[in-house]
Image 1 (tube, rainbow, N blue to C red):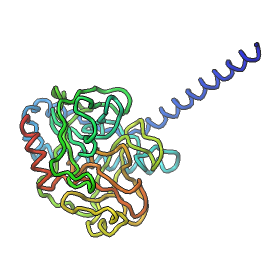
Image 2 (image 1 turned 180 degrees about the horizontal axis):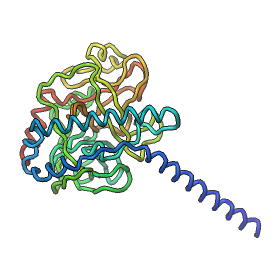
Image 3 (image 1 turned 120 degrees about the vertical axis):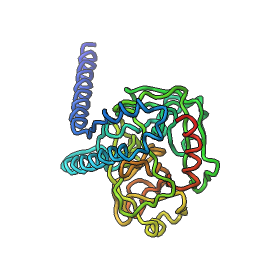
Image 4 (image 1 turned 90 degrees about the vertical axis):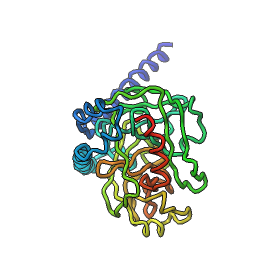
Length: 323
């Protein structure tokens, strides 16, 4: 009996030690977290929340977002270079990122279980992928905002209504965009902030730097992130995108674009990042949509093209009602 008790005591202390090591390593990792300060913009956004689309369209406001985006690129690059010297958690191949660096990021949940990402576009409306909204009813959805952690922190909001683009095609992912309307308006802060969508019909140049973020899998077939990840990636010319290994599933140039790498593995979104934001020049240019695996060579990620008129018009028809 004494031996059994001694054995359980030993196991207990070994478990305590393991938990301590895990928590300690977590603290070490999050100490390299990328952070930005959106406090000034947040105060202005909160003051203009009832006319937020007009506020976000102001040239001086766009310049502030662009400046912050360039800072984010610089910090991500610096942190990524440091992380390569040791273990890192990845979006795939991303870095720990505070929600304060991407305060428009949303965690979408079905009955409290995280299923997708999303973006804040007004105080009542969130943008995500259509395929994230096919199964759950609006009453089964909720969102977590303002937290870098997937499982706790920030604030939870109930969903009033969800909408799938009427021309979304499930088999091809054409027009893969959806909208979520909340019951109550958000209070904007440095950790919860809307982002302007790219302009209607805007051309997206190839090889343009962008940032993708989310709590999806850290590698293909691997575990999901618990702390928010982001990475810099670059847009890919449509000709290359259509000639890549993705051509088994047709690319629709009108409603999709590719980002990542064409000839070698690179940072990429993965399962669980769907619906999340891809941002460039301080504007929301796309939604994480689909791909073949994660971060494979010759298989770039595919994103919903928000500048497409058929998508842009539908989104703004909804979000302008309460802005």
